[in-house]
Amino acid sequence: MRWPLLLISSAVALLVLLWHTDPAQWRLPLCTFYASTGLYCPGCGGVRATHELLHGHVLRALHDNAFWIACLPIFAYAALSELSISRRGRPLPGNPSRQTKFFVALAIVGLLFCVLRNLPWYPWTLIAPLT
Image (cartoon, rainbow, N blue to C red; front, side, top):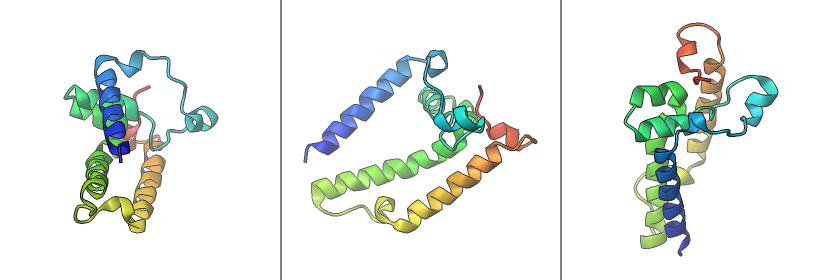
């Protein structure tokens, strides 16, 4: 049962790296979906959004990827619940990571976000990531 510790330490190491480096300056490979279609996927801008959030720039983070920022508390709670299962043998109340309805709802909202952020009209242009 050492995998939770490995995952947590890996996540912390990645967050420290992301805090110290600006992903806008990286030469990251383009998102495959964006490269092939020219459209933003639900994840486009997520790394930049996380970087901005780590530096306390909430509005910039929301502009880069509001869907990712909105999902972070849910993902954190799900991760804590999974850690609780590995340590105490029982999840936290309402553990979203083991509910099919949660994943269906997340997929629907992600798809809706994907469609809306690619519309060329105001106010939808506000949720398109900075390029």
